[in-house]
Image 1 (cartoon, rainbow, N blue to C red):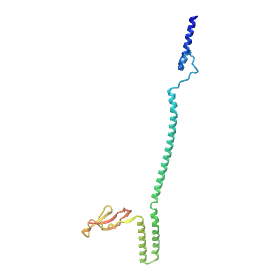
Image 2 (image 1 turned 135 degrees about the vertical axis):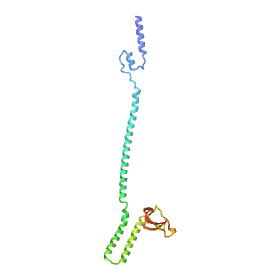
Image 3 (image 1 turned 90 degrees about the vertical axis):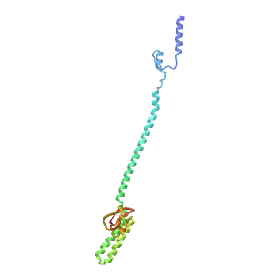
Image 4 (image 1 turned 45 degrees about the vertical axis):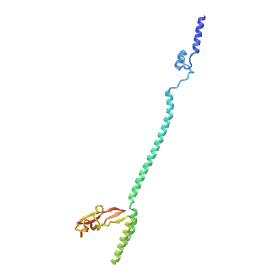
Length: 203
């Protein structure tokens, strides 16, 4: 009887010394194959990492969507700017001569009146005077738009300004290599050559 009592005391003592930090699998083994419902499952490192990454992933997705929306808006603004600029350029080219033509209309009116006068008068002197006035009015209008005649006669021949039609013997030695006659006048537009002067050069 004493021996049986000692064995029971040893088993009770062993049960009391069972450690508290056993895992679920160890608790099943110790408890005779029965899992302990009160034991808490310990989270693994993977679960913790996923919990930390999820909010960062959502934030990145939102930022990406915002950047994409901003990019699309900027692209649309750029396309609108390009279309508007191209349209304005075409309008500018189409209407580039508008101010010049408006300035020339009064001159055209004068020519029309002069043509009517030719049919109704025999006064040649008056007609010459009228044509001269119209010419000067036309020239002043063009000068106001930047047109300037080129002075070529007596100047040294310059291929950047003059177009040599032919060469004649120079009347004097000081005219050799210079323009001795102007066949067609050259013109500048705001200091840019828009028509070369056709000249005869002394040789």
